[in-house]
Image (cartoon, rainbow, N blue to C red; front, top):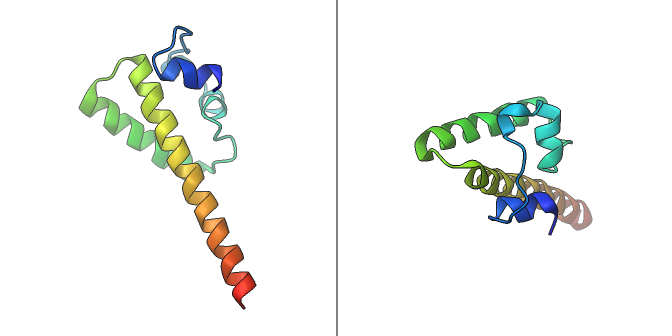
Length: 90
């Protein structure tokens, strides 16, 4: 488990406030450096809406952001797996 994941799960190592980070720093911390601009915008819109609804503390925000980052990564992996399966089936 990385330091950022540990902190996001309520550990003692605090993460920076996402409001104080540049977009590149934020997405690098989440492991989403390869996310394109339209996906980044969608991610930020989701997190802003989620934050307004739940009014989380910093660790809760990071937990939700890491969860969404992992969902995005899994969807990319699943898409690539299906493309490979289709290509092998032809």
